Length: 174
Image (cartoon, rainbow, N blue to C red; front, side, top):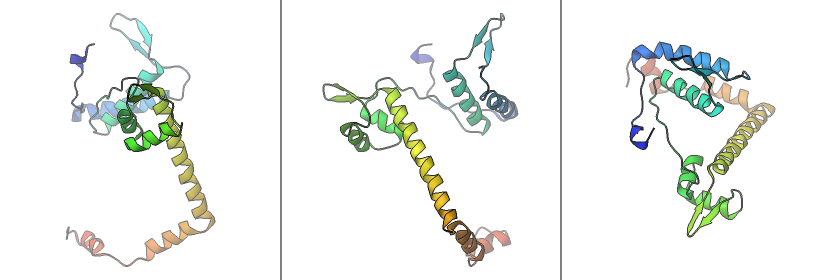
């Protein structure tokens, strides 16, 4: 496949495909915990085991299509510029430059460019996700420990009705 074969427009499932995609998504999710990956069978019967990376991509794309979302594939060339790494990590270029300066992410100097291996950018993104997950768990734990969860629940259940609440009950959108 050459670059002219790649369509930049998102792919969207038809209404007719949504039920099949839901079934396929459920099947692929059931396979994700197994030790054996699915196989692709060609029309002449040749079987090829899907590489793990292809399986995970297929599972995510099928899931998104089944939810009615459009999907597209973004190609990241290795190595990445600081701008591309920032886009992948979901941050600003200045933040990535600081990470490089502090030695948090290794890089290669190519003239004026600082290039980052795709693998290193992904590893940092996963590290950030793990830190965020732990932070949320810690906040939830502290919230329960100090009784804040039940306090917020009480405040929400005893708050004064808002104009929007009345409008929803009356069936209007005012």
